[in-house]
Image 1 (cartoon, one colour):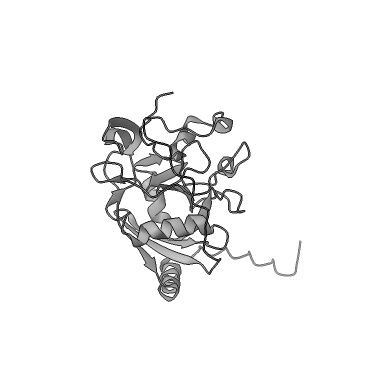
Image 2 (cartoon, helix red, strand yellow):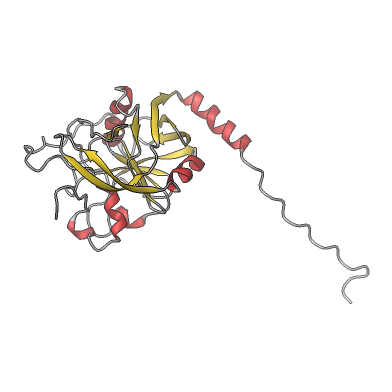
Length: 250
C-alpha cells in the first residue's frame, strides 16, 4: 500500500473504507523511527474545557483527565501553544467523522510533538459528539490530530484490536459539528512534513477553519452550557388526551 494512505491496524482492515479516515497522516517513509511514546501523565483532576472557534460555529469540549490523562495533557499542550489556531479540518467522512489538528490553511502538515500512549482501554466510547485521538496503524502513534465522531462508532472501540482513545466530548455546539459533517468534499493536494506533495480524498471543498482553540475556565463553561440550554428550542408538548365521554364508556 502507498505510504500516503492512512489505514487502520491490520485487524481493522475488514471495516468499511470510510474508516481509513481516522489514521494519523504519515511522516515520510524515510523518516527515522519516532521516539518512544510519552508515558508520564498528571494526576487525575476535574474536567478541562476547551473552546473551538470555527467557521461553522463554536464548540465547547469537556475533556476527561481522570480517564484519559495522557491524551488530555497532550491535547492541552497543543492548545496552550496555539498550535491549532489557524488550522483546518482536513478530512470529513459524512455519517462517520470530522478530522483535524494537523494541517494549516495551505494544507501543509505541521510538525508535532512526540507520539503518546494509546489510552483506548479507558472505558470511554466513540459515541456521537466525542473527541478521540487519530493515529497511524501503530497503536501508540498519536500526536496532534484528533477526530470528532458524527455518530456512535462502536467499531472504533477495539472489538478487533487496539481502538481509538476517546478523551472528551462536545457539550455545546453539536449543531456546528453536524454542519461540518454535511460539507461537500473533494480530492485536494496537500504537503506532508517532508515537503512532499500528496493527494488526499475527503478534504472539504471549502476550508473549514479552526480559527482559535482556547482553555475555558469552569465557571465560564458552565455559563456557556446554561446559555445553550436556554437557547435550545423547546420540546413540543404532548397532545392532550381526549376527554372521556360523559357518563363513562358506552
